[in-house]
Length: 340
Image 1 (cartoon, helix red, strand yellow):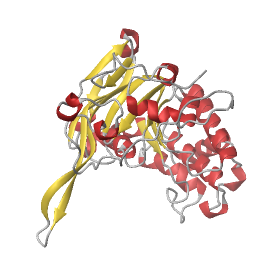
Image 2: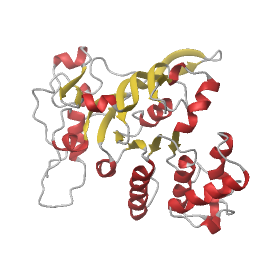
Image 3: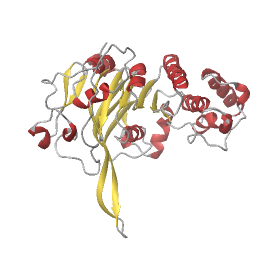
Image 4: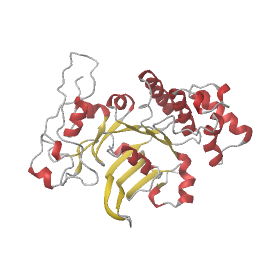
């Protein structure tokens, strides 16, 4: 654990993002949507942290807050620069954040809407190089050609526009754009969810190859646990704006400590039909982030909930080396993971 912490590239502490709910003619604030509600995580250099959870749980908002694409409401985000100096990017002004922006990039979920239809492939991939003053002219074109080849596209197509490409090819363009300024850290926001299954595998393998080649660190956001298991070194599970469990991938899949994680794992398809695991059907609906329940947010749907869960929020704690969980009864419950 200590060794991992020394190699931290990114650490998030008590990160919150609340969106105001405005009502009436005067747009008075009547409440807040707690999209991200006090999360803690760290990512070591060269690793992939998978962030999973149901749609609407705050995964994408968390990823965008970490990049300062949207402004956090509260919390700290420490990022290690090339000089090994750590900076809290929540404290940086617009000029300062722009200077380190090249170190942090994003691959977007939708390969159709994330590319400007009026720009050619050369312009799209070359834009980060121009904006960050890394290259221009002939040098820029050569760098773009190199990136295009690395992601498996044809350099003959540099003058084409996005509409001429398939979804998988467009996502490769998005990957090349993210790689252009040679970042250390990439947030991959459900990069394969809009693609066919056969193409998903190609993009996942490409991301893994590029990670080794460029020594990249990923925050991989997804709702698909099968994909996360394939690509991630560690996994963080998110529910209604909070991270409820975080551990190494194998440990989390075999030995979950939070009831929500157990329920998610029970829905993962098993390749071997002889492996039996009861699918857990959660009662009720996902809690409303604008009006979450008291105590543990998951308690209205939890089959192990007791009186304390309704009134007291569980502590985020380490129950085993590198295994963190937010549950009052994590030490007592015997939960079922994915059969080997």
